[in-house]
Length: 206
Image (cartoon, helix red, strand yellow):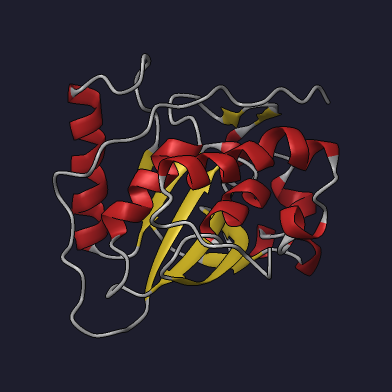
């Protein structure tokens, strides 16, 4: 597979519609699909206020939620990442801003060298508030022509999230010298560090 780095993206703007930070600590869940889940997980693991992440599959059924089946591109699943965060420290809009900065939301059913519906750009909302914020944010960016092409990111309800196999978890961190990680995923982390220094935190003693 030819590994071509995803082109540098514009820094996404501050969402005009967002939730207020909670007054007390808690846990909220967001689910994003932005290409290979290795890179997406490696980004959100390094965001202050995120308490845990899990690479997995969303968009299909439990019966087909295995890597071998998902890569046939017939299951309806997208490689996704479940992000659990503290809403007193981080807002859903901030997560969306990072999501749209570190991947290309104009690529249909692919991301960089990875092609297929399992690599599509999607937001799986868990409640109506997330749906409202995500839909408004995409409309805001389209109106401002933040990207040179139309945004193709799906905004769909989360009907189920299925954890990926254990060897996929922390893959980018555990395999830093893998050529794919170096070319495709490491730049995402550098983008996070550059564009959101106030939200960046090292992961696992980096």
